[in-house]
Image 1 (cartoon, rainbow, N blue to C red):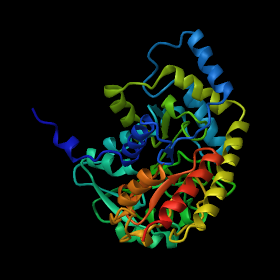
Image 2 (cartoon, helix red, strand yellow):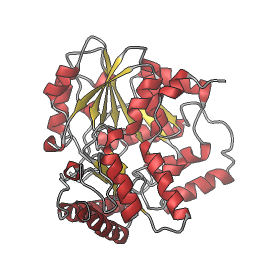
Image 3 (cartoon, one colour):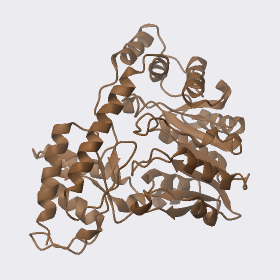
Length: 397
């Protein structure tokens, strides 16, 4: 018996793999500080939990419509109008089991074998694997730390070919925390306006965790708005990762296609999670701002500590809850045990085994000179983690 070729072509998620290794060490009684997982450490706000409890009491226990309850889709449209000045109708919204499924739905519905999908690097690990699943070809456009990990309009134009069918843009970014400004997005939109056959998949799941004052979406530009698919959800902004509720706001033809696909393999997402998400969007937003402020405080703390470590090259990320330092200065050095650090994967394993801090190597993000560190944990743990990291890196010779 054989596994399918499509499965064998896929790579295991590096973030989940590192998280599993750190959990194995924890099970052995080792005090591991996990900076590898992109998950808020806050609890879901009380009013959202109460809405879920109310939904259970009111017997929301049956199948929902495939794209989600109409009331939730209306709430999402209201959010898009009030917060983003974007006009969508409920039939353009499809709710799924997390934003991850939302991205995959779009790719599976729009990409054929051999179609090219432009992906700026560093990129979220799953984009590449999803394109593989759709039998497309990823075209990687790299942007290093010297340009704040953001591609330019010129780079985008140079990557476009007659086979280009989509661009995946993530802002605020996982893994870098970089945020495209309105002017930077405008310049990308000006290029894409010349190529009406290119779909723009705009992953905005970290929208509410930004430190520039206001989120900007590429969907705001009229010249490309009719082919932008906005990806979002409640996981990051409302500390609801386990509820699994993401969504797309898309051109009607894309929404209808995703509805058709989803109807055949998962149907609608959890009915209870949908009612909780509805309360999240319609309720008081103070909780979102409180978490954002905490993340910004932690970001400032982590950037300051990282910059004090000789050999780490840092930028100042403006969103999400990651730092992505360039660490190639440590490549070629040896551990106290005489093992050579050849790449970022070696370095993260060394930090896990020696400093008992879990990070993720940049190879899987398309940036092998860097490592990703999440600061979605307490200030106290972050201070201890960077003390350990500094000591372990200083021991490399």
